[in-house]
Image (tube, rainbow, N blue to C red; front, side, top):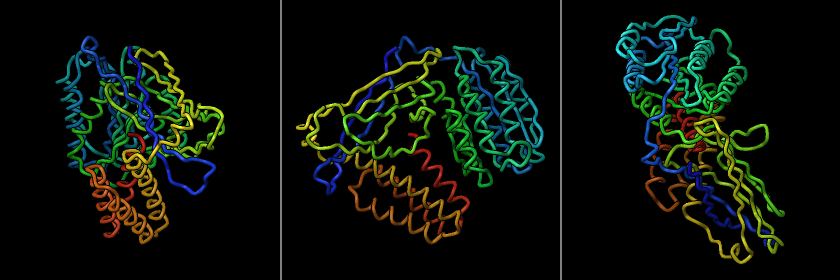
Length: 404
């Protein structure tokens, strides 16, 4: 199988110290496109875990059921599926099995009614158990957890939950989380997705649920590599000043990246400081590691070199500058959230409006315009004192920017 391609684009950062040069490196990892002779759809092993607690009553539950029915309708008889529902109790509505009778499964989903409190951990755990029963090397395996509420029964400690999620991911079963409305714990659901090598979605309007289930299935079917990590080692007095994506790190200090998907690109921005007139051309060594869909671990090493002449020729790159600014804005959204948590809504609004001003002063592009629009929406929520949804929006946008 063709390996991912690693490309590095450098941009100079103006600074006052004449003895060193500072660069921003955009590290672009592009997965190979799907080959026509490898177009056979991989087998899935999907565990749907649906919150049916009392707060889901009405529109939310109906759209959740519609999303689950959509997912089942997309499966082949060779795929495996389970459906777990939870409130303060857990019920296995459909035990892990081949999707050979989708109409019977859809009829069972139609019967789901809302009730009770929210034991999220127990619901997720049963979904993971069901997925483990269908675990096979050639399958793509995922737990898809949907909830609209705080976990208020059973195990509620986020660290304990995330340790379990991470353990399941190492076995080859990822976890994606979908938070509906404004009552769920976004910190927990985001942490579960990060620990589980999956995705996190904030769904303000339940009508978007079937669409997001479609995105999840499409991403799963296009998986090229999972459990992706990036090692970044500086060479010859070069210093890594920052990794702007704010990735989680492994216990070996490598950075956890999103899953690799056929034909898609992941971008990371690293800030470096390089002494002028150095003796060696080696600047940075990258180590990209990922687990293939056949469970084989692959490692690619890439050394970045610059001669002194090449270093002197580097100028500021508008594309790199734009992307690094977006990552800085993502960090500033987190600072706005921290001000919201402290009750300082005026400081949070100032953080947001300052970023709008900074982006407005940049060369305008569709991406810049979209970022400004997001920030203006966030500012509007804060002005209306809708800090609960503002917090969720800010953290969701930060998550998407850092991961993608």
